[in-house]
Length: 306
Image 1 (cartoon, one colour):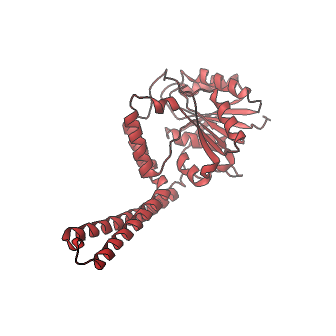
Image 2 (cartoon, helix red, strand yellow):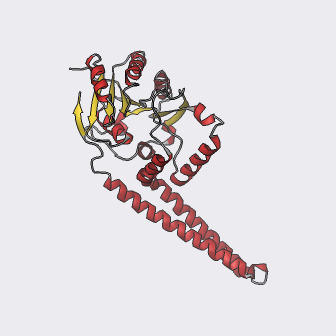
Image 3 (cartoon, rainbow, N blue to C red):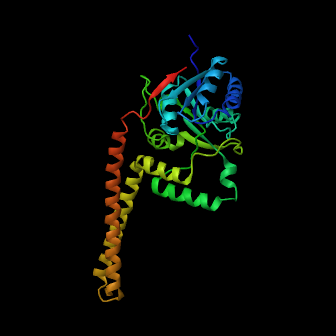
């Protein structure tokens, strides 16, 4: 019987036959340095290359590797969910399959997590966010996403305690997108972000085109609206209260410029804006709750495990 791992490294795999050998060798070397039992759980998301065959060959010579092949292309998040559910370690590290994140930074994430008694640490490619090329567009996009979804800057490179997301029976506590789930499960004081290295892409290209990002926003956006609905409602109530103060001021000072029709129009407009915001808050809340209930259906199907 295999030794129970302390760490599980979960890697969603998609069309990465060229990077898998190097990636798994580097991850294994880094995990050896942590002096704790570990496993590497690779979830192959039904890509078009021979990633699964490469994974089987690597597994034959490395008992720490576990391979899972999905029956269809369910997407990176579904592959990550599958790996998280199948992982056996107390702590889970997630990392992409494209060699852009530096595997040696896994030790950096773990050290920061334990030394600060945290539950979740993200590795943020700081150089990417500080680069001048495209920084204005990226910052504006992040601002809009954060404003709409109350979403903070995160990454797919992270370490966290597994039992926060998987119960004692090995079942996922939530099938929502990771960042949406962790906002509900983990207080801000128990999570952090640190700067990590980020390499240029050597193989293939990112699957996150503009169209892909829009699709993800449409698919997963509702999961973030639990917090946003409250924000919208509070803004709406505040705006309505402001319009009521303006109306009270009009009643007190009837014979001043406040009697002008434009002031009446402004007061009515602010009241209507508040009513719209409250309505949006209520609607988004019920939509998000309906969506979360619907997420109870399976999001991945396993074809084979090794």
